[in-house]
Image (cartoon, rainbow, N blue to C red; front, side, top):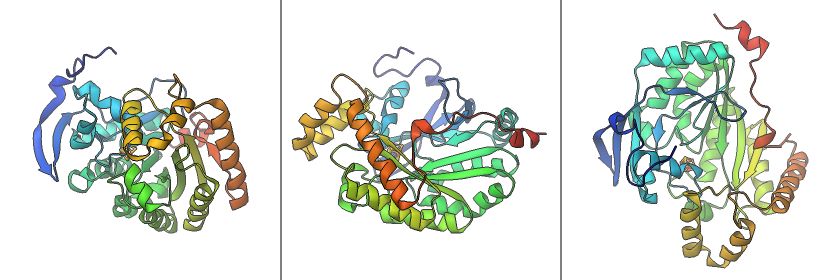
Length: 325
Ligand code: SF4
């Protein structure tokens, strides 16, 4: 879709409501969502449906690939993605109907594919919690959640209720154990050790958890020591699977990330320019090198690691279809 800079995309303006809360310099605005659970028509992916309760994300990761999504709301400044958070309004009845549609398809609903469903806004607005409450009413629905937040612990009991009759997994995105580096890369995300504690609590509660080393950042987090430490900690915390993916710099993110590099790690700019010359993807030889490293370390640690792209394309499973009624 072609969008004019600074102008909401067609159909979007009517859905955008007023600012209804403000805290710590962040504005929260309403966004009426036609549906919260949406069928994916893109290329085959490991999930068939997505649910993103919020637009924008206060955690402000410098590498966040979803920054461009704010352009559809008429916001072109990078800061707006972190400071103007849209909260999707939906009615519980429609949500359950949407989840039933997803269940009928037998395909996985991925919660948090663009923005974090447990970002700070969730502690107040609880849209993600409402999705989970809806999922409890739709046994047999298949769900995955991806987050950097420890707030997911709040919903352990709900997750257990879902796990008793449906499929659910929680993916923890953790890129480094270096607290100072994490603070620079992911300024308002919880500390990495706290994310591992949350992973441990969920795994101990019987929830399937995965480590997502996403993204792996060249020369910042791609070293053997860091990758091994992440895998070891995840193994100890009870994660069952580890996945990784090298940084992707799509337009919108590329500018923000290079600005960050120039300010914080100027010595790395030439190397990133070389690795990402004319492409959103890193050079293939570099990606191959990192993948081989993660594979080897994962095997040593006892994980069956895979790249994000190695996840099987989601197809309805006969077991799940049998649960549809
Ligand atoms: S937590 Fe996820 S969605 Fe939020 S800014 Fe970071 S990468 Fe983006």
